[in-house]
Every structure is written in structure tokens, then in C-alpha cells.
Amino acid sequence: MVDNKKTVVCRDRVGKEYKVGVDKLTMRVGVYGILIEDGKVLLSKQWDGYDFPGGGVNIDEMLDEALVREFFEETGLKVKKGEIVACGNSLFKTFFTKRHLNSIQIYYLCERVGGELSIDNIDGKEKEYLGMPEWVKFGDLKKIKFYNSVDSIKIIKKAKEILYGKKTN
Image (cartoon, rainbow, N blue to C red):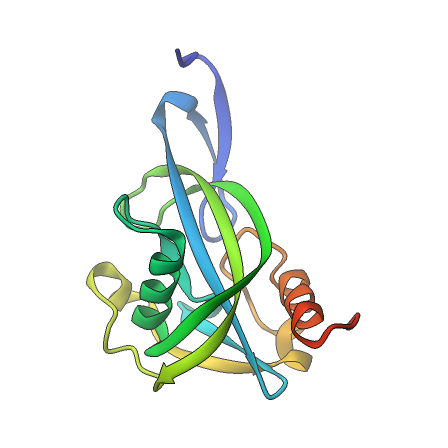
């Protein structure tokens, strides 16, 4: 039974905090892909910043199916799921639906298997804030804004270590 008096703090995409009763929270699993090629990482353009391509897992999907679908929708590229790079969770308030989520987030290394960069496959409200995905040089990562609740640069460094087999800066 949920204690309706217990509260948590959720954050929105810009870090504003909201005190929320736990009875208002919904669980969500999200999967995100890290695609590294030629000293760059592919990021999803969102508003005036970036995030990893990915999103929510539908109730009828396996994790790898959701990752492939979400990555394709946001980038136009077909990928194959690799190793788990990071896993965590965050409490956040969604931008459009204003729902409060306890989101489990899984970040996978990906390998490109086809497709071309495109945003022709995004749907619904995402069309209002998603732009063309961009390849970002590793050296430029500290100069950009990320719209997520994780240490994106740390996750990219860990992905590079998995991919190249050595510690990176």
C-alpha cells in the first residue's frame, strides 16, 4: 500500500523542482543509445540542447526492440544493441503531459547497421522540440547543453572505454 503522505522531489527538463506525492508517480523504463563513430557521438537535438536518442519502452516491447525503434524514430538510423554502458533512475516531470515519473534509464552502446540521418519518423509532440540529430566531437561535449538527468559526458567516456578498450579523458 502506498503512503499517500510521502513525497518526493521531481525535476523538469530545466531542473525546476516539484514536490510530488508518491501516489502521483508512474514507473517508466527508458532506453537510450550511444553511437560513436570517427571521434564523434550522435546526439538527438532537443530544444536548444541535446540528449541521447531513445525513449520509453512500450508495455509490449522487449528492451532491444524499444531501443531500435526509438533510435530509428529520432535519427533515421538502424542500430544493433550492444553492451549496457550505464543504468540509473530519475524522478522527473514530463514537458507535455505534466506526468511525474520514476524513470529507470538504461544506456546502451550501439552499432549502426543501416539508414540515413533523418527526423521523418518522429511523431506527435516530439515534432515540436526534436531537431535533426548531430554528430558532436568529443572535444566539444563540455560546450553543449544536455537535457537529461545523468552525467552525459561520463556516460560517453565509459562508452568510449568499452568501445576502444582503454581509459579515455
